[in-house]
Image (tube, rainbow, N blue to C red; front, side, top):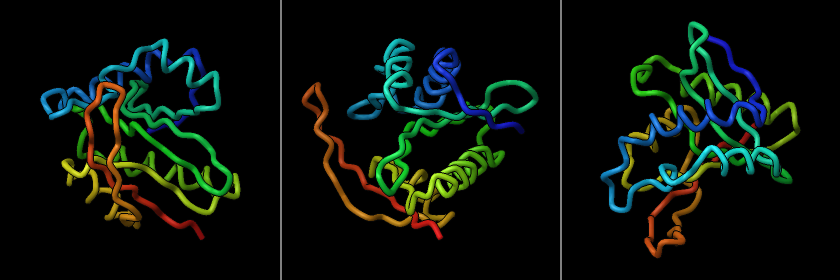
Length: 156
């Protein structure tokens, strides 16, 4: 398993992993907004302060996460593992890598948002030290409202 810092040129790979991972949410009400993102929107994000890492298994892209540094924290989003690689510890490896990176950048916490209607993701984060910090309602551009929780992990 190898984790690399992504560049703008990796946007197609990041997009492919994300779409594969988020397709399972296409029938949710509302569907995940990740499915509306394009290679172009990803490229623009990477050109404007967003960062990403990609996890390779046997030289094939298997997972990724996007993130941005904030004043005292790292906020990550769209953690994605391709379906055929679920259950292999890839998400936890990616999160451990992010935690190390955040510490190197002197950040004091990691934050993410998780849809309330996806309890398996909430449990994943709780299993490695995250806790529910806040409940929110995300108002999307299409008018839909999505109940989320903000999850937080304090770094030592």
